Image 1 (cartoon, rainbow, N blue to C red):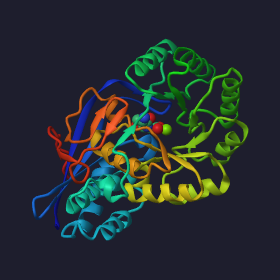
Image 2: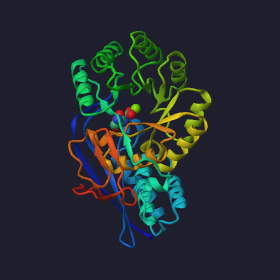
Image 3: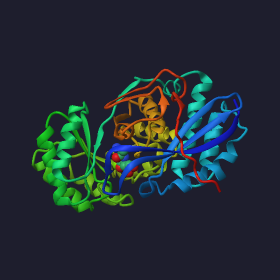
Image 4: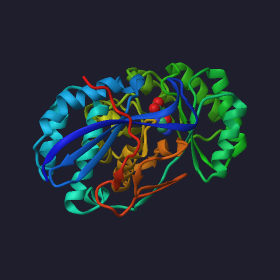
Length: 366
Ligand SMILES: C[C@H](N)C(=O)N[C@@H](CCC(=O)O)C(=O)O
Ligand SMILES: [Mg+2]
């Protein structure tokens, strides 16, 4: 099973409703899809969105990184030599974690196919059903309350509420949602770096004093402000989760050393794929720290891979935010992972179970 070609295309899927955070607003998922073909006719599928405000990666940079740096290292290589292939992806160039993730996903897909097993089984097994939260975009208070009630009625038992726009309104947003869905859903806040450390402590203490129980607060302060993150972690009861502050294993080690957060959000687009995500989960497990498996606004191609990893690492990945496919108006991807609102069920096909991604748009040539 030798790699013969690596093809790229663009998958564009409309969202049910615009996705709005403190960092950006978008109304489509737009992923660069990677198809790694082998000489015996197999295809491994991967994908990556361009979340430039978080990873720095654009569609153009993902295409260039794969085409000019990663693909040349892999052509002709045997899928069976998996760990060396992964090392070649990671050492092909610095950063560019989304491009690396897209290719790693395709390689783990093919490795599963080579061994005739769903990839989560090769990663250690686990329960094939995982349960995700859903994002409530930051918006007018009434709209966020209506979206939250709707999500609970659709069966979501955890809401990821986007805040970080205006501290006073944020407190009111969360209080109103809490009053509307109290006892029916866990509330997770994600400020996407929108607060200062002092604002975060003020808002979280105000919510705690008002009796609003929060399961966690994600990335309250700027990504690079690790001492601000620590300041918040030390002053509130609500568990603090690091997202944009940590990409790879070395940043996680530093975060743990500093005791700057309580939980880590692992995303394939930050780690550069499954290999770095596995390392983070193992480091966290050693330190008795819990993790979330998260995603960017991305399609089911890459979210399926994240769900496989979450299933295999459920001892340490105790929270799931894999709602990309649930936020889309439709899913053109042909695969056997079933995304049914809050419930994600892994299929029995080998690899990640994707068999085709129809309707891909051409990506620019050089
Ligand atoms: C989609 C997911 N629920 C989510 O919120 N992910 C990111 C933001 C991703 C994006 O802007 O595409 C997060 O901050 O956790
Ligand atoms: Mg986040």
